[in-house]
Image: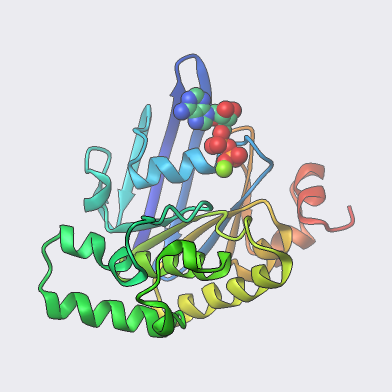
Length: 238
Ligand code: ADP
Ligand code: MG
């Protein structure tokens, strides 16, 4: 079963053609990393998959359903942003529960999911705190927890670690790898960090100027880069 298939996806903003004939697939349970330089279209591609932007043309299929006209909340995805995007006036528990409350889930189910996610992410001690009372790493774990409670089929991470310092980055990276093993969910992870890409990915998609430049496992790309751009990007000697 394929978690995501993109067929000839294009996205323009006015006259600016940002995504150019994107074709790619994500298998169920696969961890796929999008890499590429700043401005190449990584965030736009995630936003198009999430439904935060409409594709100009092409087909977006999530889990066997064409979702081009399906609103974001109904796509079975959850997105984690670099900026955390937590609600400052809500404590950790309520930040994590909010989407489930909006879906009118039973209270007991909401409590159970929040408890599970906070255990997974070591947040049990912080449930009554507001975001301002947390460190950057803790805030990002809450943002990840808010995605986990929704039990999405597909997680989308947009450079989730880039606001953290080096030690926390490694820590949170390991946390995300552990989550992936525990949940067996499909994940797409955007980064411009080669180490994150090489260590997390089952499959790397190299983007350049709105196009897919090469797709392969970390070792394939490292050993057989299609061109100098890929070689330089993934840091292998060419
Ligand atoms: P990345 O995440 O790889 O750094 P982005 O997807 O943010 O790249 O941006 C890709 C290109 O699309 C950039 O040239 C950016 O200026 C342009 N872009 C992104 N969003 C918009 C928008 N809402 N309106 C106009 N141009 C946009
Ligand atoms: Mg971006």
